[in-house]
Image (cartoon, rainbow, N blue to C red):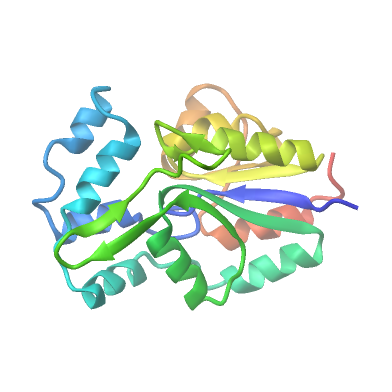
Length: 218
Protein backbone atom coordinates (compact mmCIF):
# COMPACT_ATOMS: atom_id res chain seq x y z
CA UNK A 1 0.00 0.00 0.00
CA UNK A 2 1.46 3.36 -1.07
CA UNK A 3 1.92 6.01 1.57
CA UNK A 4 0.24 9.39 1.57
CA UNK A 5 2.62 12.27 0.76
CA UNK A 6 2.91 15.69 2.40
CA UNK A 7 5.02 18.11 0.38
CA UNK A 8 6.23 21.09 2.36
CA UNK A 9 8.10 24.29 1.68
CA UNK A 10 10.92 24.94 4.15
CA UNK A 11 11.77 28.62 4.79
CA UNK A 12 8.96 30.29 6.69
CA UNK A 13 6.96 27.04 6.68
CA UNK A 14 8.98 24.55 8.70
CA UNK A 15 10.83 27.52 10.19
CA UNK A 16 9.64 30.78 11.72
CA UNK A 17 11.88 32.97 9.56
CA UNK A 18 13.34 32.83 6.04
CA UNK A 19 17.09 32.47 5.54
CA UNK A 20 16.85 35.24 2.93
CA UNK A 21 15.33 37.73 5.37
CA UNK A 22 17.85 36.96 8.10
CA UNK A 23 20.96 37.26 5.93
CA UNK A 24 19.71 40.49 4.37
CA UNK A 25 19.23 41.86 7.89
CA UNK A 26 22.67 40.65 9.02
CA UNK A 27 24.44 41.81 5.84
CA UNK A 28 22.38 44.77 4.56
CA UNK A 29 24.72 45.52 1.67
CA UNK A 30 24.22 42.16 -0.09
CA UNK A 31 20.64 42.71 -1.29
CA UNK A 32 21.47 45.44 -3.79
CA UNK A 33 18.76 45.69 -6.44
CA UNK A 34 18.54 41.96 -7.08
CA UNK A 35 15.14 41.34 -5.49
CA UNK A 36 13.64 44.39 -7.19
CA UNK A 37 15.03 43.12 -10.50
CA UNK A 38 13.24 39.83 -9.86
CA UNK A 39 9.98 41.61 -9.02
CA UNK A 40 10.31 43.60 -12.27
CA UNK A 41 10.75 40.36 -14.20
CA UNK A 42 14.34 41.16 -15.23
CA UNK A 43 15.92 38.13 -13.56
CA UNK A 44 14.59 34.85 -12.20
CA UNK A 45 13.82 34.06 -8.57
CA UNK A 46 16.83 31.73 -8.57
CA UNK A 47 19.16 34.37 -10.01
CA UNK A 48 18.07 36.88 -7.38
CA UNK A 49 18.72 34.49 -4.49
CA UNK A 50 21.98 33.22 -5.97
CA UNK A 51 23.34 36.75 -6.37
CA UNK A 52 22.29 37.78 -2.86
CA UNK A 53 23.66 34.65 -1.18
CA UNK A 54 26.96 34.98 -3.06
CA UNK A 55 27.44 38.39 -1.44
CA UNK A 56 27.62 36.97 2.09
CA UNK A 57 31.00 37.46 3.74
CA UNK A 58 31.06 35.69 7.07
CA UNK A 59 32.65 32.96 9.10
CA UNK A 60 30.86 29.64 8.91
CA UNK A 61 30.19 29.87 12.65
CA UNK A 62 28.33 33.15 12.21
CA UNK A 63 26.30 31.80 9.30
CA UNK A 64 25.39 28.71 11.31
CA UNK A 65 24.13 30.99 14.09
CA UNK A 66 21.96 32.75 11.49
CA UNK A 67 20.38 29.51 10.27
CA UNK A 68 19.72 28.54 13.89
CA UNK A 69 17.87 31.86 14.22
CA UNK A 70 15.46 30.67 11.50
CA UNK A 71 13.78 28.81 14.40
CA UNK A 72 12.84 25.48 12.93
CA UNK A 73 9.70 24.08 14.58
CA UNK A 74 11.00 22.33 17.72
CA UNK A 75 8.16 19.82 17.46
CA UNK A 76 9.19 18.80 13.92
CA UNK A 77 10.75 15.42 14.87
CA UNK A 78 7.66 14.31 16.78
CA UNK A 79 5.32 15.63 14.08
CA UNK A 80 7.18 13.77 11.31
CA UNK A 81 7.22 10.58 13.40
CA UNK A 82 3.49 10.82 14.06
CA UNK A 83 2.76 11.41 10.38
CA UNK A 84 4.81 8.35 9.45
CA UNK A 85 2.86 6.37 12.01
CA UNK A 86 -0.32 7.33 10.17
CA UNK A 87 0.99 6.45 6.71
CA UNK A 88 2.40 9.81 5.59
CA UNK A 89 5.75 10.47 3.94
CA UNK A 90 7.12 14.03 4.25
CA UNK A 91 8.99 15.69 1.38
CA UNK A 92 10.60 19.14 1.39
CA UNK A 93 10.39 21.16 -1.84
CA UNK A 94 12.30 24.43 -1.58
CA UNK A 95 13.56 27.17 -3.88
CA UNK A 96 16.23 27.81 -1.24
CA UNK A 97 19.57 26.09 -0.69
CA UNK A 98 20.13 22.62 0.68
CA UNK A 99 23.27 23.83 2.51
CA UNK A 100 21.22 25.25 5.38
CA UNK A 101 18.11 23.08 5.01
CA UNK A 102 19.97 19.81 5.50
CA UNK A 103 21.93 21.21 8.43
CA UNK A 104 18.80 22.29 10.25
CA UNK A 105 17.05 18.97 9.62
CA UNK A 106 20.14 17.02 10.73
CA UNK A 107 20.31 19.04 13.93
CA UNK A 108 16.74 17.93 14.64
CA UNK A 109 17.63 14.33 13.65
CA UNK A 110 14.92 14.46 10.98
CA UNK A 111 15.59 12.30 7.92
CA UNK A 112 13.25 13.21 5.07
CA UNK A 113 13.54 13.70 1.31
CA UNK A 114 14.73 17.20 0.34
CA UNK A 115 14.37 18.78 -3.10
CA UNK A 116 16.34 22.05 -2.96
CA UNK A 117 19.09 23.87 -4.83
CA UNK A 118 22.57 22.52 -4.04
CA UNK A 119 25.21 24.86 -2.69
CA UNK A 120 28.44 25.27 -0.75
CA UNK A 121 29.62 27.98 1.59
CA UNK A 122 33.05 29.66 1.50
CA UNK A 123 33.88 32.50 3.86
CA UNK A 124 35.48 34.54 1.04
CA UNK A 125 32.98 33.67 -1.71
CA UNK A 126 29.64 33.45 0.04
CA UNK A 127 26.97 30.77 -0.22
CA UNK A 128 27.29 29.55 -3.81
CA UNK A 129 23.91 28.13 -4.81
CA UNK A 130 23.67 26.10 -8.02
CA UNK A 131 20.88 25.04 -10.33
CA UNK A 132 20.13 21.30 -10.35
CA UNK A 133 19.71 20.86 -14.16
CA UNK A 134 20.18 17.08 -14.04
CA UNK A 135 17.09 16.72 -11.85
CA UNK A 136 13.79 15.70 -13.50
CA UNK A 137 12.25 18.27 -11.15
CA UNK A 138 14.33 21.15 -12.57
CA UNK A 139 12.95 24.67 -13.01
CA UNK A 140 14.96 27.44 -14.68
CA UNK A 141 12.93 29.99 -12.70
CA UNK A 142 13.24 28.47 -9.22
CA UNK A 143 15.83 25.73 -9.53
CA UNK A 144 13.40 23.23 -8.02
CA UNK A 145 10.07 22.89 -9.78
CA UNK A 146 7.57 22.55 -6.93
CA UNK A 147 4.73 21.91 -9.37
CA UNK A 148 6.69 18.96 -10.78
CA UNK A 149 7.31 17.68 -7.24
CA UNK A 150 3.57 17.71 -6.51
CA UNK A 151 2.65 16.17 -9.87
CA UNK A 152 5.18 13.38 -9.35
CA UNK A 153 3.68 12.72 -5.92
CA UNK A 154 0.19 12.60 -7.42
CA UNK A 155 1.38 9.86 -9.79
CA UNK A 156 2.52 7.78 -6.84
CA UNK A 157 -0.21 8.46 -4.29
CA UNK A 158 -3.91 9.25 -4.37
CA UNK A 159 -3.49 11.30 -1.21
CA UNK A 160 -1.17 14.32 -1.47
CA UNK A 161 -1.05 17.41 0.74
CA UNK A 162 0.92 20.65 0.43
CA UNK A 163 2.08 23.25 2.95
CA UNK A 164 3.68 26.59 2.12
CA UNK A 165 3.88 30.30 2.74
CA UNK A 166 5.28 32.19 -0.26
CA UNK A 167 4.88 33.13 -3.91
CA UNK A 168 6.51 29.96 -5.33
CA UNK A 169 4.01 27.90 -3.32
CA UNK A 170 0.84 29.17 -5.01
CA UNK A 171 0.85 26.99 -8.13
CA UNK A 172 1.73 23.73 -6.34
CA UNK A 173 -0.78 24.44 -3.56
CA UNK A 174 -3.58 24.69 -6.10
CA UNK A 175 -2.87 21.14 -7.33
CA UNK A 176 -4.13 19.53 -4.11
CA UNK A 177 -7.65 19.54 -2.60
CA UNK A 178 -8.50 22.48 -0.36
CA UNK A 179 -8.72 20.34 2.80
CA UNK A 180 -5.13 19.18 2.20
CA UNK A 181 -3.84 22.65 1.30
CA UNK A 182 -2.09 24.38 4.22
CA UNK A 183 -1.03 28.02 4.04
CA UNK A 184 0.32 30.93 6.05
CA UNK A 185 1.70 34.44 5.39
CA UNK A 186 1.71 35.57 1.73
CA UNK A 187 0.26 32.31 0.42
CA UNK A 188 -2.70 32.43 2.82
CA UNK A 189 -3.47 36.03 1.84
CA UNK A 190 -3.23 35.24 -1.85
CA UNK A 191 -5.48 32.21 -1.61
CA UNK A 192 -8.06 34.29 0.24
CA UNK A 193 -7.78 36.99 -2.42
CA UNK A 194 -8.50 34.57 -5.29
CA UNK A 195 -11.27 32.77 -3.39
CA UNK A 196 -9.47 29.46 -2.83
CA UNK A 197 -10.03 27.57 0.42
CA UNK A 198 -7.16 26.31 2.58
CA UNK A 199 -6.25 25.28 6.12
CA UNK A 200 -4.38 28.05 7.97
CA UNK A 201 -1.50 27.27 10.31
CA UNK A 202 1.18 29.09 12.31
CA UNK A 203 3.60 26.30 13.26
CA UNK A 204 4.41 23.31 11.08
CA UNK A 205 3.38 20.70 13.64
CA UNK A 206 -0.18 22.02 13.30
CA UNK A 207 -0.19 20.71 9.72
CA UNK A 208 0.71 17.27 11.02
CA UNK A 209 -2.07 17.40 13.60
CA UNK A 210 -4.72 18.49 11.09
CA UNK A 211 -3.76 15.78 8.59
CA UNK A 212 -3.86 13.08 11.25
CA UNK A 213 -7.25 14.31 12.46
CA UNK A 214 -8.71 13.99 8.97
CA UNK A 215 -10.41 10.62 8.70
CA UNK A 216 -9.12 8.65 5.75
CA UNK A 217 -8.09 10.40 2.58
CA UNK A 218 -10.88 11.54 0.29
